[in-house]
Image (cartoon, rainbow, N blue to C red; front, side, top):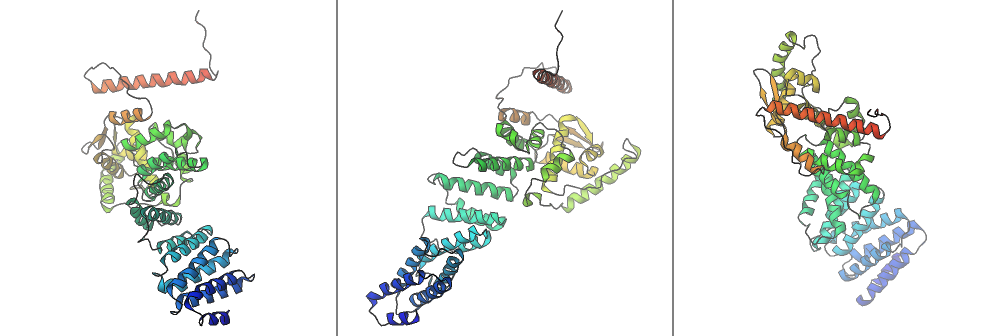
Amino acid sequence: MDAKLAQLQSISQKDKAAGYLSLLSEALAQPDAGAVARDVHAVLEAALTQDHVGIVVGRQVLAELVSGLAGGAARDRDLKKRIVEDALAIAAPRGVSFEEQVNSLRFQLADLLEEEEDWSGSAHILTGIQLEHAQDEEKLKVYIRIVRLLLEEEDSVQAETYYKRAALLVNAKTDRETSLNFKLCQARINDYTRKFLEAASRYHELSWAGEVDEEERSIMLSSAVTCAVLAPAGPNRSRVLASLCRDERTTQLPSYNILSKMFLDRILRLAEVKEFEATLKSHQLARIAQSSNDRLAASASSDADDGAAETGAGAGEAVSTRTGPSTVLDRAVLEHNLLASSKIYNNITFYGLGALLDLTPGAAETMARRMIEQGRLKGSIDQVERLIWFEDSKEEDDAQGKAGGLGEVDMHTEDTGAPHTKKWDMQIRMTAANVESIVQHLADKNLVTFAAAS
């Protein structure tokens, strides 16, 4: 091969291109992989680095190599990877002159690395592609692919950087496939950055896309339920929960039990939480740090409640030493149970709420105070009596009903001027309706019979 390359130096410039292309084809056609790699390297070294050859010839040789590799000239995966990496290394010093061909080689190498599940390596290769002269649609596809690969590697920080670049290029003219890929990246970025409400909504939207495989749609629906459960308790989450409960497909998911209990504002038990925790991904199990202010407030408030517990109804009972949630799931469950308790009690002491949530009384007060401040819980705190008073969250209940498909329900109730009386009447009415529903269900299953009227 060296002798043949030496002969090409003496021929005319117009014949050099044909000569180098002939040698490249000859090198790729050899049966021995080692000889192929060695001879291709020699041809590229001569064509791309020697000034007397010229850039035009070098581009032709590199373009022929790209075409040959894409057409299967190197059937062995390791050989193809070796040739591409070698070609990129040789062309690197003059990469600007061979921009189009280098970009094509990078795409091929990224494909090989992705097939090997080297997500980080593939993303790194794609980040080196020069996109200054590319169309916006092509840039968008590259950025989306980089985001997807980085998320597979769970590098959400760098993935968010390229996601923001992609967001600037999305528009109404974006084709359907690219748009769906972008929305999936958006959902996963929100998931990794703990914006669970936005992630749940986007996952649920994608689960209805007909272009997506049935198995993928099921995974997205499951992800939507998971994110909805992990989202901060409040009216916005109630709307998302209602939308998911309305979807008949969720009844087939393993997480439907915890979804329905959250939607119905029922208190979650430890066994149910542990079962759900086993389905979470690593980033969804991240531990959260408690601020120094919260720790001080919890300990200061707990001192007074400890004294009250020694003389009050809680005397002799063990008081929890937890000063706050430890994980994202723990926080979501505690906030949900606090919200659920507001549907059961008119008021509750700091000590009682702490016992219910397995927190110190001060920590329970801190959590309730924060949720009230953020508008996620309707109520007030009486620090003199050390009580939390809950108010009717009619706005949230309306949101659940409308999102759940009930529509506008016009209920005429007698105005007695006594809010506690009206609440008591409503509780009696709901209890009677639930009992009637249970009896009807048992009758449909032929589990109960009714005596005929005489």
